[in-house]
Length: 500
Image 1 (cartoon, rainbow, N blue to C red):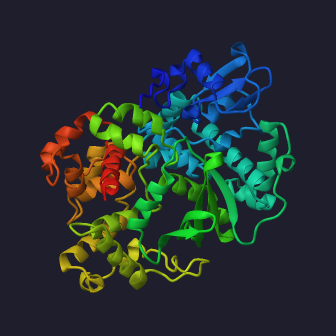
Image 2: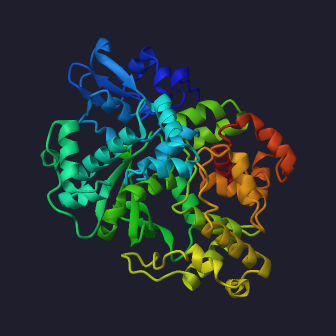
Image 3: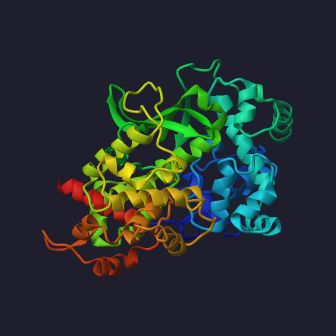
């Protein structure tokens, strides 16, 4: 397996680094590896497209290239109605600019308060503007407007939500403002692109794209083994396997179900109608949970040079790093997994959910409760938590983590380094290196997080059967895998599953 990517496109690039020759080559090939990495503005039509657009390819002289949809729209282009740029997966990078982008994509600027966002990030509004201009060629407000418009366009074309619900779900303060900006930017009325006629009372269905390949079964197997009974589950049905869970976000409660649509290179997300007002942040969480913004070919081209990993890449192409719907949930699950089996940790997690979580009615018996809040667990005595089958020390760690989360400890500053994030997590009593690295790997989405103290990883990396490396040896072995060590970890865990 030998994958070569053009160097300027090996990951998402700032505007200044996009090479027209490489971009056009990817466009002609309709190469899905670059879907969302860049967008093409066609001067003859005034429309911008994804590299995978099925329309007749424009001449090279008519094409200009942009690292984001917002940059293309700022240059005066309208989104293509055929390939629908809002479906494109994001470009996964770990730098300050993309950390800010992810917050804006989840609705952080829906109130228009740039000063507050800048303060949360630790920058002045002027610095924030400069960072986004340098990387994407647009201001924070322009980026937010594009995200809101594209999200509204997605809802118009995929759901039957009323126009008022679409406007507010996309973060607009009023329908009038939504209509005006839509017409100004896209030169058409919102209703002209409406496809669905009525809202499905059983749930809102949306589509989420990914870059192929996607190891769906392996991702579901990983999530199923670590699912917390009562909160989430992987179900087998006539239409295939799916992931379900209860949802409590932004003061709204409901449920969701995720299925695979391989022929479209998409996941199908169905959510409770009551969650319509929080669809924007909800979709961002689902994208993170299923690692939809990863470019598996980039990771594979880097990691396949190691013989140990190359064989597993061939066996499970498109393996992702499953994320977390809520960082606090995952952090608690990581603590419960300290020095016990995966199955044992899931059993205790289910007891925690049913003992302290709020009951909820969903279409799925397996999703009967919400996860207990950090505030509740922070106020619960360790001896009460221990009654679910924990030692007092482990129960105290859970309470410590809850206090930490209540104080905002899990809301890491944008652009924070892996080392600083791990050090911050280890200030919690009872949280060591393994737990902190695992939280960083799944909940905080650090692509280089690597829990070298994990016994399974030490065993998987060992050359001789029935042996394992030391933590120090494994760290040295994994050094060349940086900055994709989290994907290497998943490959190693998966190699053990294949042996079993």
